[in-house]
Length: 85
Image 1 (cartoon, rainbow, N blue to C red):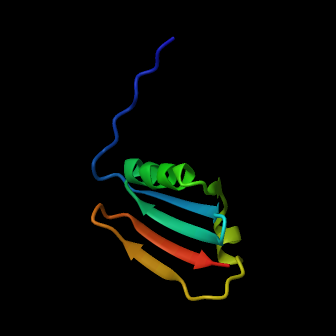
Image 2 (cartoon, rainbow, N blue to C red):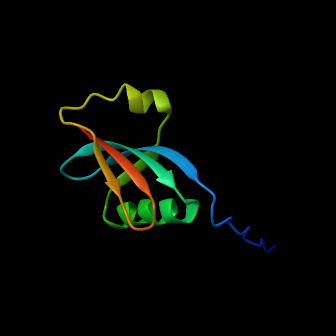
């Protein structure tokens, strides 16, 4: 059985909340951007040894953190807001 990949609209946007655990820190990410770019960002985190799981908006909003929220904008228009524990 074969499945054909559905093409993405070049203007499509996706929004995702993630909890990311690395060896030295834990953070919550608020990602917005094109689905293929977000998939690439998540893949890179996993390849670098991070544990990644999807969380809800409520979990992101109630996440306890000590530092200010960091916003990252890259050249491919992905917006990442990060809260560090």
